[in-house]
Amino acid sequence: MRRGPSILGIILVIWLVIGAIAAGQRGYYKGDDTNCAEAGTILVTIVAGPLNYIGANPKIDCELPEPSK
Image (cartoon, rainbow, N blue to C red; front, side, top):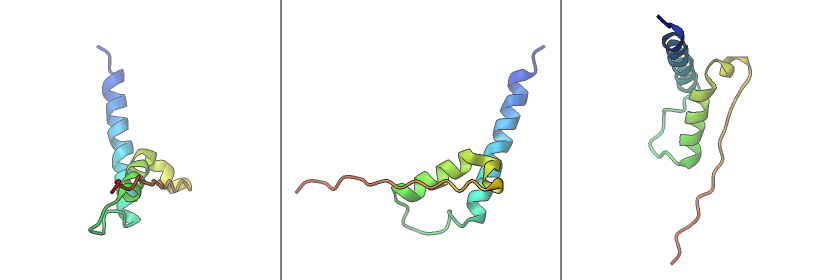
């Protein structure tokens, strides 16, 4: 029996949960109007996982094109 994928899956889930906790501690889930930059910052913070606690502070800045008139 191979245990590799299940252990990696557990590690991945723990990694993402730690990232979600870090995003919550930074207050990223508060606020009513979510824009592209806020959503992107939340996503990369979650993906960064434990790296948030050793100095990583990922941020996303995005500009969406304005609709033509």
